[in-house]
Length: 276
Ligand code: KIV
Image (tube, rainbow, N blue to C red; front, side, top):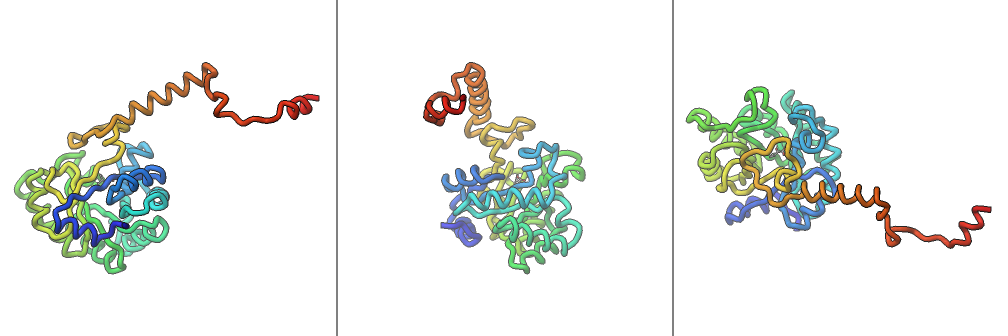
């Protein structure tokens, strides 16, 4: 059954935890979909994990559409959320609606995600008026890395915590259907979760959100450039891959790969005739 916004709302009401993972390609989307993950997020974290940038700021609409379309082709049941990249919605409400529309039409996303609270409510209202569901994202929002002066946990002082609680209520009133809470204290995330009726999805925000999201290369131990405190490695796929690459190299160099079972045959007589 295809996951919808209504499914997620019901899950919050029934206190069933929601699972979301980042995903950037067709074959990984198929595996996550088969595992039953409810939401696949084409995060602009692909700037780090796929494209090797040091932050998410250089990611373009074209990058996002390319990867969103690949994930959409691989997922039958999961809800597809695509990130709006830096400067695709901050510049104007018009740009926000136009670019959200491209992620839906060209990328075949179901929902778009944008970073910010009260300051992006105009954009959230306009996008939802165009019948495009929105996931808001507050807290340690990576597109604000320069404004924050680094990637720091947010909402620790009373003033900052109050502002995030207000942001959560404002994005809900503006029409957001989901809310990602990133890099904030667990007790604040729990308070926000009980203060809004839309599902909250946490990353570095403790266990009391309605759901959780992780970057898949982080949870599979495939990305070591930086590993935040909130990451749990559920497998060490990075080591398995490195070993497989080394084994392949060894066998090619020794001449043991390809073996007869990996090889196509032709009648010897044909080869002999070709030699004449
Ligand atoms: O870009 C991303 O992967 C994200 C998640 C970390 C929530 O926004």
